[in-house]
Image (cartoon, rainbow, N blue to C red):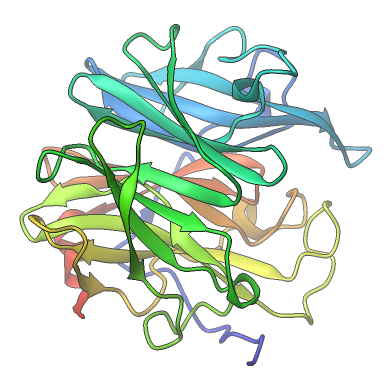
Length: 329
């Protein structure tokens, strides 16, 4: 199998990057911060809420010492006020301190947060809150699984989530879907989106869920991420040789039966292009990793994404334009 993907992919004209990008950087954080990225964002009780990943260390020395999750609030989804201390404090024996890449879903008046941490492999976890201070841990999985995202309403009386196990085929992992009565016990797992070139010709490596889906008239619209790898790429980012490029795509699931894939964009819709997404100042260059999509009453979709594993950014599009990109499957 070839490891070289086409280089002509471009961001779709339907997508607009926000002119204030990057919206959140390490300089905006009032405590030790180095890389601020891969945030989960939701609208809850009249304001926007962000839980962002903060890898801290010394960028000049190209050294990372640890990770925590920060909390920020916004009235407009653009200008953010960061809480004065991390959401989870230094508790090395508690996995919530080491949680990474949070995704947030508002469901039945509460906020569900999913993320992952390292415990003899990549382990996914789910917690729930109604005040961002007290968290109830609902579920801690087993290795190796990642990229859990929960739907914002029940379907058929059950919670639904997308997930991406680390199994099989040299990093060409597939996206699965599962259900739960309560957020603790998950089952009814089924393969949803195979990682095959027939489905995603722009991916020759990893892919998986990105932002929690949004409900539209035509179905559940979900932003996904996909990776192309080229061994000829060298020196991308101060993490070392980085031959991968992360981009964002779209899939559409049936409203009444989200286990049914009904639409798919055959090309990426958001590709690393501006300097803050690819320039070698980043930890890992050429990375777009969406963690949230918010559908506004106006039809605008806000897509929040980490760029270059270094900063947090925003792109927007009209929901009708995104739906039009999803070809029938």
